[in-house]
Length: 473
Ligand code: SF4
Image (cartoon, rainbow, N blue to C red):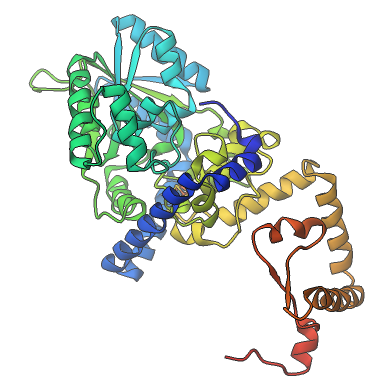
């Protein structure tokens, strides 16, 4: 997918002006977040918090010895007949996948959802090499027809409404437009079934890599994942190196929290543990099984200030709880990973200077941290990225000057008190009889574009506190 994170502001402005998208985002609303809350309550709030603690510890344990666990994974996977391939970046991952296609003479790839294949632009590479890629996750299939990237990591077509999908299906399937969801699903299933039965390559991602057994674990809600990994004669799992965990016991713990955090389900509809190719007495499975382990910038996190980000298990809860994501949608972020997790990942993967506004695309309200199943301190990481931007002088000079002025004032209490007194009185005057300011000057201008600013009552907090003024109930 084309990288456009540098244009976050323009893309967000376009998303805000797009009424249809806004309607679709409103419909999406707090659906997943509410389901997560219900799942947490059903599990027991205290027990759920313990599960979060345990999950974060599992991820930290694996990441603190990442090299050792990856080598153990390679050893165990190889012992069971899987070929493990290492790729330093996206280009190498695509090159290795194409080598597999050439080796086995593969012509058609069915794919289950894989964010890493989006990251590596694998579909384009396959198509350019004459291998037809077919997305089989319903959301991804819709987006392949629309030639659009996903806008959410677990619900990729969440930005589309029924009418848009109906038009797409009518155009590509030659069917009559309909608003009957069951009929549309059947239609997609009929089209995809022929691909399932004729493909010679299955490409999947991997939610977790289990070191002790050399297995790839896949969590899906549609049966496509199982068909992708068992029907074609060659299966390739393409996944990030950070996905490794030590044991099946760890997998069972993480599996308890993943679906609950993502969609509020106790467990996903399908949960597969893939270990090696088809054996002599197996009735199904690929003849050849490959795992491509991709770095593509992940090792940059190790040992650094943003290292906790590698714990991410790609559940989507942070974006489901993010007021910014819910307002501007996933495409505004300009790359594969949207929402708070994307605002940390993208600047590291693509360069801080190429994703200038992403660390700013958050209110720092903390909802993402509270929802994250592996307790990633996303607001802190975003703040760290903002500090890095300032240190590297990547922010506009006006913003840097404003922060310098703020720092100068805030470290001089008397000056600070005098300036806030002046500001409180000026703002009260600007508010007039209505007590509301329709247009703030300078940096405040953007804030008042969509709403009025409530004018203060003319005294600072300290003055009110000293005078014993209490807010009326
Ligand atoms: S950062 Fe946390 S909440 Fe967001 S996708 Fe990753 S694991 Fe889920």
